[in-house]
Image (cartoon, rainbow, N blue to C red):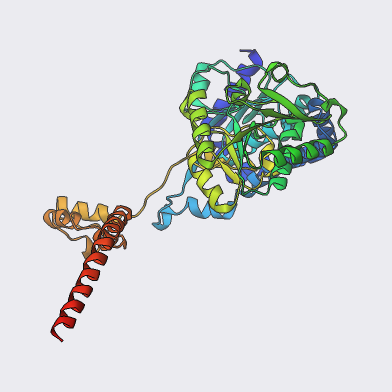
Length: 498
């Protein structure tokens, strides 16, 4: 580890100990300074994004706006007056159960795709949560890293925020810090304190026969071709009901032909894997990208994470076929718990069908009949099951903080337990807590309240309906025969005696 990195790490640890980042005013000032410096360099930053990533001017501007929004929204989570009031809750005899504190130290390794957003999203959230941050900006790019270092170095306190070039191999740091890893190694050891982007997890789309096929094709083609096809949330595979596959491919071909953003560098060739796969054929292509029809599920393409503007399409015969295929595929192809679900799924169908599909296809997030434009920006979200995907920011201050509640009042269960054990009431207690241990045990075995569901014996279920129908079917001819015989018998007797 370089000497400059060691010195920066020593400063961060010292700042963590003195607790300066716990002050809300300090955090507000840091984010304000950063926002102002980025505004001063906005023309240079947007030009650097375009040069380093070869995306269109509009796409670079959208990424710049998304990164600035992360800083602004992180700043707006900080309310000094409220934080001051909450801080002194205990002095007023009140609980502060929602108290959170920063973890202390964050080490962020940023990726090469969406380099502006990928730096600011975790940085702003970590600062807002009250942490010191060691930031490793990807040095593989030519223009943007230098500008970001300039802006961060000028705006932020070097004792709490440091930017380094080299990978940090300090095991103590890796153990004590929260690690944001946007480019994890394929077989890197799992760490409980690591938020590793799921960059290799696949994204799937389902187009049902009830979908608006034209709108589905438009959304999926745009998502796949945007940002040179490099978005982690671009669809890697589209499964289309066989009844609407032909019109879907025709619509997708039209949108591929119509897609243009003025970036000549986007012109690419079909990947070697597509060219050599006998079970895949290119059905449409243009300067912007390709539509590939995969005719067999044995093709290796169907299990690949795609990093180019190529939309892979295959067919399904029914909803059950889609669910069976997609669930078995993800179960077979993934190894870790974090990768037993798709990164995202896009469901195009009528609402009841979309509900059914999203319920049974395992994915971290499901989007029905649309693909949010902001989900395409930035790195893949880390595996963080404690809270749902934040589409716009990826990282939130809650990810970089821990619960630390302050309790000033005795709860009713605690007061009752104290009286049952020691025969004393708390100063804050009331007669409600004055229960003996035996009374407390009797209270504990009281039945739960009713669910409100009708009793099962009062309902005729599926199997009961079948039994009744069967009995009715068998009894009908018997009853008809008996009735007919009785009628003619009574009639004959009547005629005989009258």
